[in-house]
Amino acid sequence: MARVSTHFDLTRTQPTLDFVDVDFDTDLEVFVDPRALRLIRTDWGEECVALVQDFFTAVMEAIRHQDDDTAKRLLLQLREPNETHLGWSAEKSRGRALGTGSAADVWRALKSSEAAQSGLLEDLEDTVLLVDGISTDIVSDITTNLIRQPLIHYTQAACNWYGIALQTGVASGPMWDPATQEWFNEFTDLPMTPEGKLLLVPKAIVRRQLTYDSNEYYRDYILENLRNRELSANTNLVKTLRGGTRRVTRKSLEEKYGRGKAVNRSVTMSDPSILTNYRLAKRSAVRPPLTHEELAADEAGEAPEWAALVNDMRSISSGTKHANEYERACEALITALFYPALSNPMPQQKIHEGRKRIDITYDNIATHGFFAWVAQHYCAPCIFVECKNYSDDPANPELDQLSGRFSPNRGQVGFLVCRSFSDKALFAKRCKDTAADARGFIVHLDDDDLQILARDRAASAPADQLRFELIRSRFGALIA
Image 1 (tube, rainbow, N blue to C red):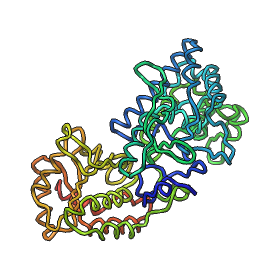
Image 2: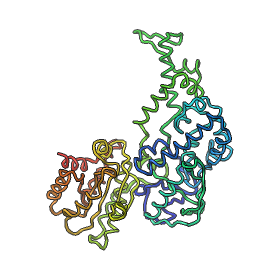
Image 3: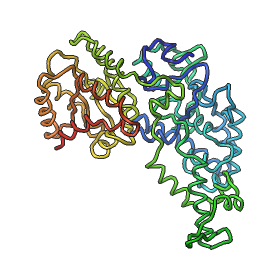
Image 4: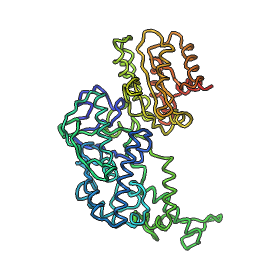
């Protein structure tokens, strides 16, 4: 097995890495979900969403205007992105891997689809529901192609942080330019493996199944619509049970209407509100990122070793000499601890034209738990972490330093992490004063607190893992 972490000697496991720790020798059976990109409410996520939407709109416009040359030219640049090592393994049945032939099939499928011609399709993921021949792996491959440039930038940043060597002059592969509505190529810096160039993919955007699912759409929306039609018309499919309950069986509906995308398409064309309702439901029900346990089950690495991560942090001596070591150990533990609520740790991020730096900045992509709650009620698109490897207690200057990193755009919630507090109650009062002065919400954590959080997470049931009661209690004290 040749994972990224072992090949590049990262001394890290999957829980402490933000990207999927793929094996070069095969493909990991997970897929890039275009709906998952909408969870990432940052410039990077918005760029990805815009690229996918812009390309799909351009293709749909060409198809609706019967501009076959343009539609084919745009679609035929799509390739199977082997550099990510995601999708169906070459050793398994690959279904419809995206290559030159299948890219042409995508064009033919869209061109012949009434849903495409009518303007019913609004997003790339709609095609999974309504267009024959377009499946989960095809949509994943198309999405990866379209966000290749942001993924290259992500890969470069990750390599710089984790210490992975980059090779210069590597062919990027086709990248979509929304300004010119054309594909372009360039030479760039990327890591290389024995299998070729490597493109790292954030764990936050991969899923076992896409959020849009044609079988689910058929079962829960199309059949339900057909059932209501039959009941309303009181057809011979309606059976009255003892007690007067009227019902229509799934079997009878399938015998009359059939099943699959052809039924999805024809029924949706007759009543587009079905698709509208499905979209609305999915806006608030995007599949959450894969958990540590799910990734481990998918052979993307091991489950977190919480005791080892805590010991690695606690074993570092205090003092400025070891400040970088402490920051990296804290980042490894916090990345594992708060995933999948927080993602994309950015170390030493520069703000104010480089005049200030933030130790670690995380994107808040939480769908439930404490971080989802705090994002709903306070400004928290990003969560900031300052790590202080002091022998003495941090004081007001350290609080002022972190609160000075907050802004209405970046967010106003962060953690100040240090080795210990001789007077934790006094520091808690200082954090409360900062909040009372409308300078942001700072939760104080020391080594003991992080150990408690790791212990609680290890002992929690999956549904409770992101509650973080200790943090919720500290935050509650700030707003009381």
